[in-house]
Length: 60
Image (tube, rainbow, N blue to C red):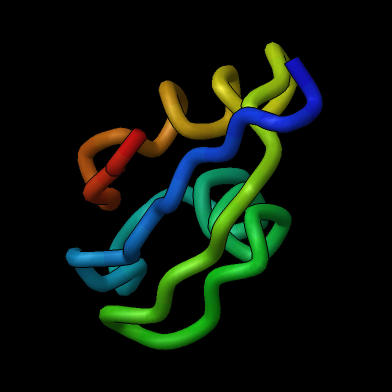
């Protein structure tokens, strides 16, 4: 499972979102709009993605 990855891209601004959602975006390693990160496919990362799915685009 450690060799699987997910690419996430921030496609919506964090302005006007909850503070903990902003912290989750930062925790995934995303900074600016359209920034991307390649992350390990773990249950913790999937939970973070699910929490802020309305801000992200995911590619398996």
